[in-house]
Length: 275
Image 1 (cartoon, rainbow, N blue to C red):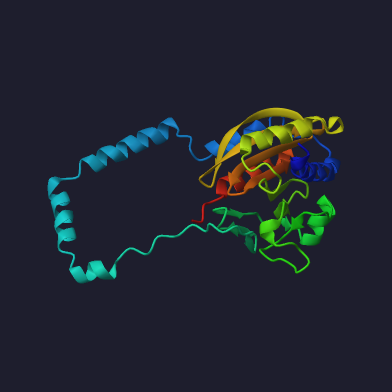
Image 2 (cartoon, helix red, strand yellow):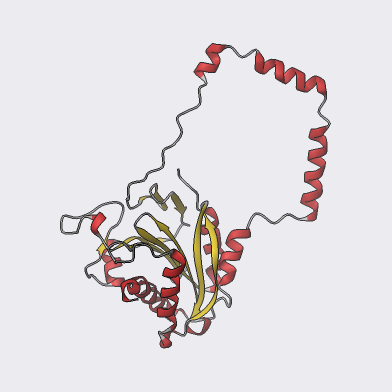
């Protein structure tokens, strides 16, 4: 269990840093997953009626119009078809790499993930990450760059791709990878990994962690195991989204206060696939 304590300590350090915010947190962190999943998918009765009307109109298209469209397609010349050949399909990046930043937009092709953050978000530097989690044997990398003093990234046990603080100066999101092959747990699943993390968090009595819900969630088209908790008597909500990718367990960890709940939901909803 100690092998995965690093992920716990990262979340704990961030939660302690945020605990001075005061006020009440969102009771029921499970709502983060629920709203992130369902936002933009609910259909009102009026919308349903509108859709039905549009479908009816489409069905009333005359046979003559359909025939004219088919004729136009058949008249396309061979030269035009060649000129308009479909572009080559994108090939997913299968080699491990950390992400890069373009302003407030983070992209990692290996992870098939792009996330845009709102104005006022602070992106932690490598030095700031070290100050948060401590400089140990783990490798800390930012923006796909590695110093000569650091181990080769493929041999790193733990890698921190980003830590960002949202405009409220309290809520934050971090992305890290833990090499479970090097940790001696090559076959551990994301669900089992989260089970270990949850046990470690609950054992920290001073943090008053309470587990609310666990299950599966989809972010940018990829399925993650999730764990929702509250900490410090409900002052903070915290959510872990984990999945296995090659030799790594990917962890997207969100710590938030109630006033920034919707901002966090919007960020997760806005995440897109890049491959």
